[in-house]
Length: 387
Ligand SMILES: *Cc1c(COP(=O)(O)O)cnc(C)c1O
Image 1 (cartoon, rainbow, N blue to C red):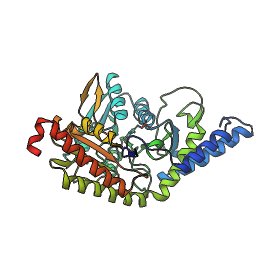
Image 2 (image 1 turned 135 degrees about the vertical axis):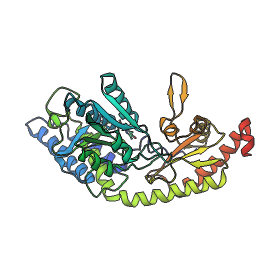
Image 3 (image 1 turned 30 degrees about the vertical axis):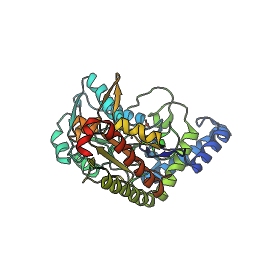
Image 4 (image 1 turned 90 degrees about the vertical axis):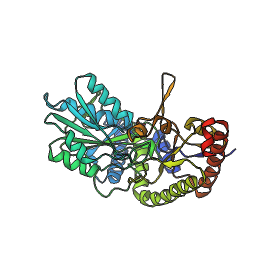
């Protein structure tokens, strides 16, 4: 059976050019980038050229790129590191209800340390209103954290305006850019003081990411050790990981705009065809600006996990946003935040497209969805109204 991958927001395969650069670096560049001898200096040289590639993608200065292990670490470093550096009377954070767990859990950790956190609501289409963020600001606010692109529904947040509001108020602004980097073409530096990216979301290996730290921004480290990465991130550098991240960044810088057009057309085709052929289906986050590769669709009366498994049996990998906590399936916090009932949230499936997907695959996926949905509704009593 052929298998097709429609879960690129969870992770992406390593692309052939990135794999090549990565394995060459693994074999050839084994020096410690802190060593003074030839091997060390060679590693350092490769590391710095990777930093240039990432900086080119982010349209920033290489000095503003800090290599870390991925999106989770970048978010944690930004959030915890900012609060550790801010004044004792600034113990308040503003974020949203639709952030990734990497941000929400870092905020929960801060709450357990006595920091107050305001979780701003989003609209029914999944976008935060910058005025709501402004209203949440207090004199003691140290940090605002709003993601650039939501990983579950693909909505693009008005981060430029929020960054302006934060800057005017003298507050640090962090944005989780993991689903935006390499997907949304950038013409200017990230619209944030701190911006997290992760290689495995754009065809580099797992375990390589970066935090953009705008010039002049002060963050405390969250790990202690050597003096690597401007003393912000100790530990012997993963040079092959950085090289791979750089290579993936260069591909994205050259091709992201064109690829977004291609994926947007495929995504629209997928949505159009599913909505035309499956009753009781609709798009979550509709009406909002969305990243090109993502759609999240509810299928009323159908259990999303059952649909996911039915599609997997037919060779198609998709996902639901729900998390399995202590055996019970909890509906996605993002879908409930945009006002979906628990039932509809539990009936929602995310399709996220990427480089390998073609129009033929999309058409086959549509057939599989139509079949699986009809089959599941036949089995379930709630299905009658949609028959
Ligand atoms: C995947 C993801 C992360 C976590 O990145 P890792 O590199 O897997 O740690 C953080 N934020 C968003 C929005 C993501 O999609």
